[in-house]
Image 1 (cartoon, helix red, strand yellow):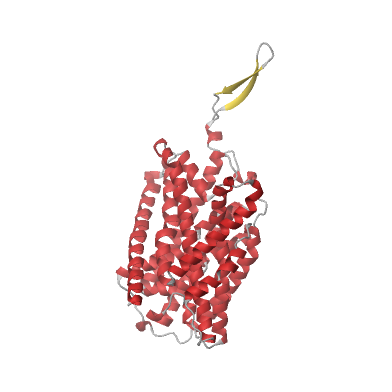
Image 2 (image 1 turned 120 degrees about the vertical axis):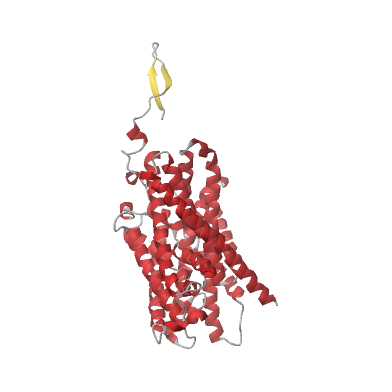
Length: 458
């Protein structure tokens, strides 16, 4: 690292020279630098608020899709697989946040976004990889955009399917397609997506969590009534259908696109990792909820379970109807939290193309177009269960598994991969798991989508 120095010449003039003094190793590594003391957040989020954001990012339509996921594996592989996916997802979040913190110390910055963490790892990593820095920036941004568009499109389908289920019951003489309900959602989604500060989304997140909690209780009430004998469901299903379970579970539990914004805007970011730590507490709760809903939901409805278990609830009972309305509201408000990080990243790339006078108008246009794209995609593939599998396999696995593993490996390459290079071997094993999810999950989902629409056209 070079330092600029000003030295006086014999004639009294100031001569500007560039010093070649190199800082000591400890200073270069940033060990004496505390990023938390250099964070300047205009609207910091409390630890409780961060907990609600993390919980909401992992609890949404995916939670209620878990019984359908269990249908593809059977009870025992479904339960074990849920715990496995939760452990892997939590581990990948840990290594991403830990790597980001280490890079912040080395680069002497207060915080870094998901994309900037990846970019700086390659920029300051092994020399032969530095030429890929810009490629990494674009790849991560595209992966984030894919998660945003795919994930929120699933949310649109989920809300529209719930509204259609309710509408068809009250107005059986007017049966409208789910695509029409997707279009109706466009205006309210566009309006509320204009909220630009994470702190102001906390009330929506709390309300969504409350709605989801009530829905969960009501769903359990119906699910635990007259549970059929275990003999009526499959303990093990064909392994050929397991990829759809894995991709659905990853979609359901991965909220990694929200992690860095939440951690960066916490008033007390030291509470995020550690033992027990905010992340660990949240993910333990998430894993338990997913296992319970998946296990007993599949026990109750068997192979007849739909893409969301709430769609299996009775249509003629007020309590069940209330649950369907509340879950639609919960997912509706979750939509904005999931859109926050991608919108922030996109605007950071686009704002330089707008005059400062038109920054507000530019943000409005960008957010409006982004929401419109998600609604169009939802209407184009209005099958909740299959789209969840495809989006989970292609996008959520890439953003939540592949990128954190690569980034950690590159960052540790010259700094030490641990005893016997255990970090490298561990990441190779997890990358093999990622490839299994990506290839088999996409193949199974696309094959099922083609078969479904081919039979519909006939």
